[in-house]
Length: 299
Image 1 (cartoon, rainbow, N blue to C red):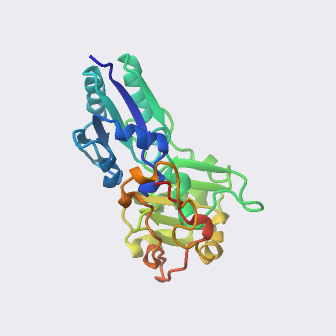
Image 2: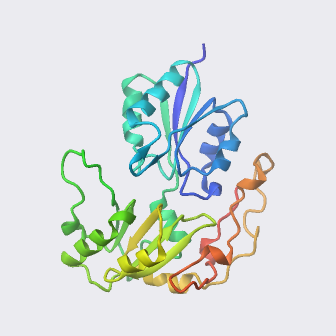
């Protein structure tokens, strides 16, 4: 019997065109795919029709499968000689519990590999016209979770220390805690007028961006009724968005028109065209995306 193995593959932040080449190759050879809630369904079409597809999505307060069961599922299929792809949104090792799954696989003696993905912490701000670092504005950034496990042992996010420790703060899974996050940062020394951006469904056709300051962002978020997934960016770099999203966009297919193996990829995995409706703000304005934010097709 063929020896099974598991690949922990990062699916990227939402746009299916951001899947890595290694991830694409593994999906095309997969016998089993265990995938998360934020994975674009079109990525599943890369797998052979015979491949078993298992949904293991999680949302706040609702888990299709508890994490221990997911671990056992990966181990069981690998022991049957199957090639298993654990497809996770973003990067497996950035708030994706990929480390726990890797520990379980290692403990069971299952061969595995980790395929990094494009993290939403970096890609989503970029698609919204916000660089995390910028000369004169930001030379450091931190990525933290806004939703911590209550059963976690040890200290949580040290907001008092974080408030002034770095120039740019990126918060994942923090939409529900936004008022508390903003007030804690101000209480511990961050300026109330610090720019903030909330980016929902980043890198997808449904992307929405709401901007404000630490003083008013909670009210703006409530008015916009943003629902997860939301990436929060806090820092002076947010102010660059107003200029970057107004730069001319590249025409479609102007870069990377042809690449090796392009004919093998499904047409619907082409990165979505930027539409004006993709860009939104509290006043419903829709600036054009920057040439630096134009996704390049690799299919």
